Image 1 (cartoon, rainbow, N blue to C red):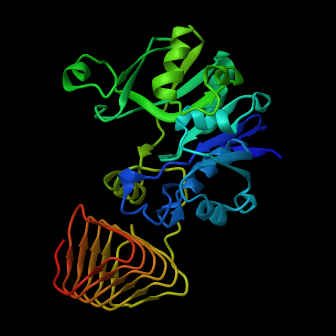
Image 2: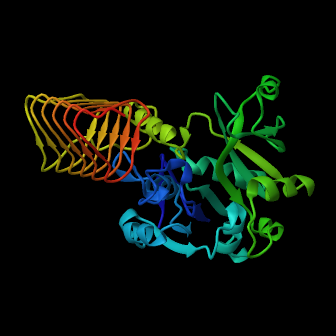
Image 3: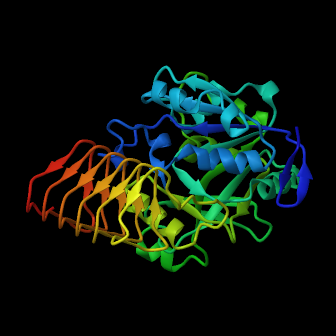
Length: 360
């Protein structure tokens, strides 16, 4: 099978590995009952965005490396046929780290593999990095993203030919002031089978702290590919998760289609829903309710005069009369009482209940 990738007809030549085994502790309480790889992003399981950018590049064979609540992910995604790919699953016997999971899931005969961290939302054109890797003849290519503040990540230094020269983990303000660029590890790599030789079998091993330094020590060809006009976000915290939704609604993520129209729902003619918001199927929105710049999941009920703004509401939540939800994330099957206030930065886990007039 071939694919059309932004006007260019290409053939698939490598497999993909998505490292989706993390517990998502930074994203709690949203990940207590929902594994991070399938938290909804604009009402779609998050992994479907990664699967889509791989499929566009002609990559059909995708392995998911799982550890936390693997059955929920398998049940939702199945064999991948519904999404135009073939999905295999590997469950780590214990947490093995990013490189350990790669070693456990990939065999040398698989050839080059594109590896994605399971918490990266990007609309990157995968074919660009594949072509750059093939042309370079490198043992490894790491994708880099430019961010305003690299202090929470780690800088990746390169020379003018985009050879990786060094890593600076979580630099302080003084270090950042001396750097000309803020390029960080974007969590997307293309690795040749020779990289497997650097990883001990059945061991907990990290790309960032063990494998990549070995590549530099061995003077292996180690290239960087900078994401330029492509969106990138680590959705691993509630703040970043909400920001990703705001970026979708604001048009800053450009290469995915968003379904904004609802079916089989009841939206009162006197309700006010702006053109940016996304409303899933089977919602009930009563008269004089106001929804601005928000994502509403399936089966949500919003009562009269409730106001939802700059927020994400997961399926089957009930928001009562006169309630306000602003700048918040509310998970599945919650109850927000009359005149309750859920203010900016609030995150409610599944089945949370706020009594009338409560403020959080």
